[in-house]
Image 1 (cartoon, helix red, strand yellow):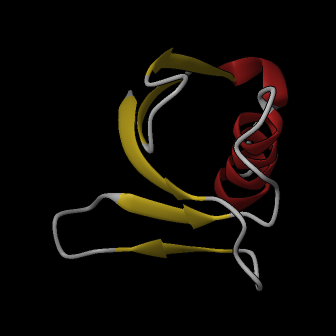
Image 2 (cartoon, one colour):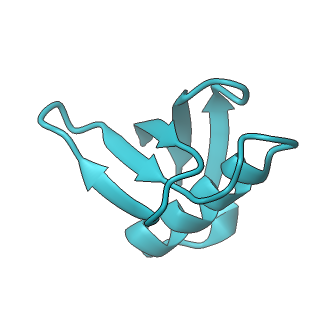
Image 3 (cartoon, helix red, strand yellow):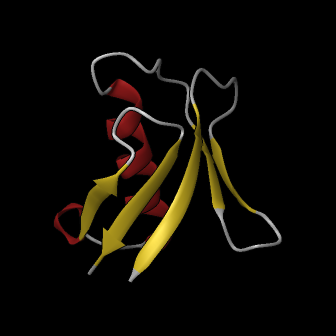
Length: 72
């Protein structure tokens, strides 16, 4: 299963919200430097979706706010 994510780095209160078109907005308090925000997004998604860290893979958007993850 693929999910689309829009990342909002440097947020004051980390959270995950779903919009009307089923895209997840992930707010993390890490900066978008050296992959820190990507690691924080993966950690948040693991907790939100209740899956193992090994079950989630970043497919597209390593250096973009718009990312696609493969779950499973």
